[in-house]
Amino acid sequence: MAEQVVAVRKNGDGDIVELKLSSGQIVDYKQAQMMAENEEIEHVNTFKGRDGDKHLRSDADGDPSNNLDNLPTF
Image (cartoon, rainbow, N blue to C red; front, side):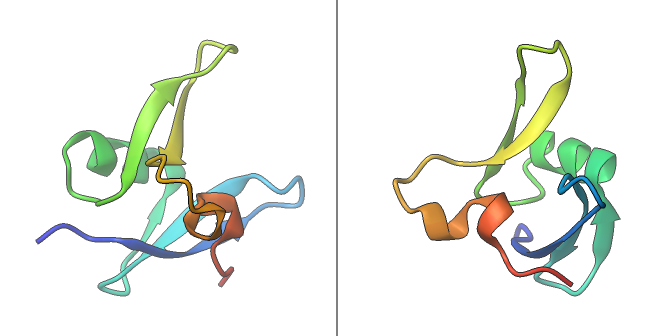
């Protein structure tokens, strides 16, 4: 069974730098990207932004409350 993101940690600029998973494991942003691409985290995916970098985002489901930016912080 895949993990789910339950909380995030942001830096001083408001960027997500770590994610807390349903198992309690804390992973950094790059590790979460790899896990999402390997389908180890549910309800998230990666995309290539206008800046050319890869980014992590919640799957679009019309519910803004479960967007990564709106999750609780830890």
